[in-house]
Length: 280
Ligand code: DGL
Image 1 (cartoon, helix red, strand yellow):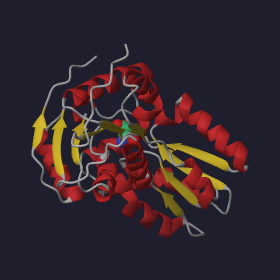
Image 2 (tube, helix red, strand yellow; image 1 turned 180 degrees about the vertical axis):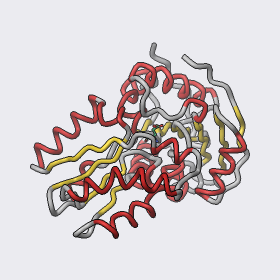
Image 3 (tube, helix red, strand yellow; image 1 turned 30 degrees about the vertical axis):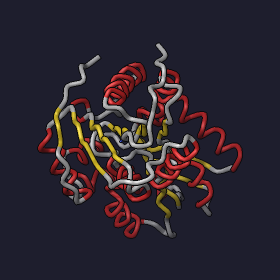
Image 4 (spheres, helix red, strand yellow; image 1 turned 90 degrees about the horizontal axis):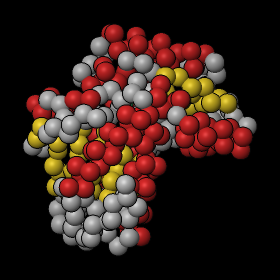
């Protein structure tokens, strides 16, 4: 079903969603680049993680969340989740053809621009790495560059980040098991292909310092996503010309837990409202 675009105004909010707290790594870049905009964040924590969901489920869920955000009056949408982007952004764009929509995909092109060894590790969810849209991008960039992409699903990592267990021994050991083999295989560039992973940057840097034989570049596309959003809004005449930032936060999970995550990860204390978007 295609929805007619509502009449957007520059003062309307921008909707941002993820399976949980990962999208906060994108939200911080959007807020830094577009400080006058009113942002609405939806964390689907009641249904996280997305990494082992089917593509059909992700399409239905992404459409349901987008419908909720459109009801809140958003003028644009950021799918701040690689897993949902790879599975569902085509369906979301087809359903809301008039709306500026930005997705997040693993930064394979910036990865290819950064490598010197020609070996690029990609850390992401299993679902992202199996998605047709992702594999097409990988084939394209690999053919154009001649470089090798080493794909590493990080099973269980999102659960730990959702629990706020960023630095525990168990989380560090889990991540070591994913990162060290990539370093040993010669990767000098690691693409953070899940929006949760930038919050693990400090731990990854420590693992790299202990195990890498050469300097390693970490690729995070959060700022590129914010720049693309700015370009689309500018092109559509929808940049908010004045005003101060505002942030509304909704979750399908536990509101106090999300409040605590905003405080711990971004140093912000927005009001968080629990809402039910029915399961499909
Ligand atoms: N932040 C999502 C992504 O970028 C998380 C996936 C999950 O919930 O497993 O892929």
